[in-house]
Image (cartoon, rainbow, N blue to C red; front, side, top):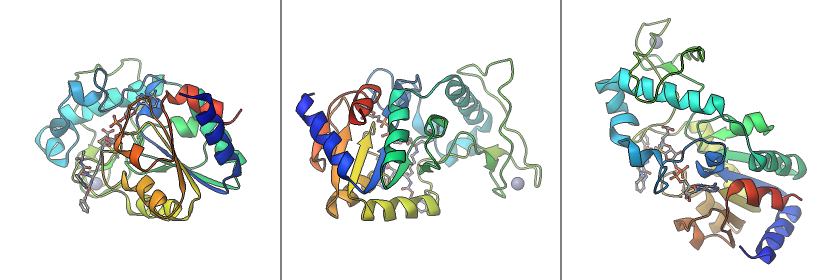
Length: 250
Ligand code: BJW
Ligand code: ZN
């Protein structure tokens, strides 16, 4: 990655008044949270998305799906935010207006000090009833760690006793309307969008950087690999989030 690109990106960021930081699974990779589509380590290399991340999968085998998300929550609880998460919080604090819009279901932005990141794909820490949608308690991370392949029957809703489901957005489900609206408005009104660690393959989230670019914002991408968003980015910084982001706020 040429140093001049980093310097150019840092200068653009320093001048921007309205900033969107749009993040995907690569943002958390260096904290030890696996991505979905990376060639060797992505979750979808080892697990079948249709059998785990769809409403049909939950109806067919709630214990398989709940157990898998218990394991995922446990991985995130053990993870810590890295220097890139801290740099994102610093950008947010420094810019006149900035917002983090994340596809991630972890809480690493919050733990690094970002204020109210917008979660487009929900959260591992917001289970709700599968029938009446009432929020349900997050199960304690007990002494016994949920193993990777362990089936666990979901708890029952305190109001209607239907199974509690993970509070994430599965394939074929609508994104939370307030989050999507905020993201679309911020993308349409920002003057700089920083996209970090996303393959840009999952819609409608992948439209967010495209909307910003179409309406004239500068787009800076941080990703070690090429993505379809290369085409809309003004600057492509090909490196890992934990290294590149801190260099932008030095
Ligand atoms: C690093 C790094 C480092 C590595 N530093 N970088 C238009 C066209 C085609 C299909 C569709 C379309 N519109 C809708 C669809 C269908 C579908 C979809 O998009 N499918 C495509 C995959 C083909 N979309 C949906 O179903 C969505 N819903 C919907 O459209 O509903 C319509 C509707 C309306 C009204 C009523 C009812 C329905 C919902 C999508 C939900 C996505 N859910 C998941 C799972 C969440 C729960 C969970 O965690 O289990 O969300 S899938 C998964 O992908 C997860 C992620 O948020 C999402 C995006 O992935 P992300 O973050 O980009 O990660 P990766 O792994 O793909 O990429 C990681 C990147 O990081 C890579 O580029 C690496 O190089 C990079 N990286 N290390 C920086 N250190
Ligand atoms: Zn209920």
